[in-house]
Image (cartoon, rainbow, N blue to C red; front, side):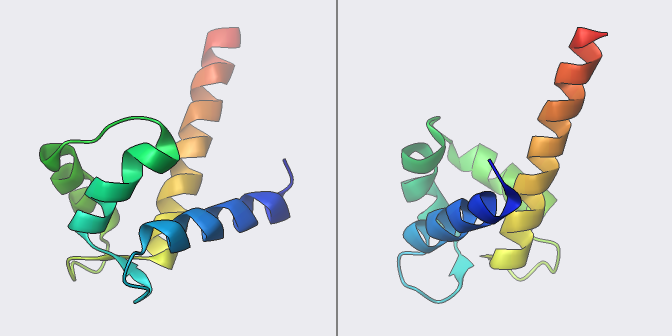
Length: 87
């Protein structure tokens, strides 16, 4: 998948989870949309942990930039883990 395709996918996912269309994701929106888009359920405790790690400005929501950074960091981590396993 190209970076352009990944960006389009992330944009689509973000917009679908952003139920009120305000450009940010609330805890409630993530609880409702996470499993649908990422294929795994998430608990309130996990959402709280997610916000502690991703909500960089501490405003109680995750904006698009924070969302993309977190997603890219997770993909990088997964890639690094696969490399470690291969060697």
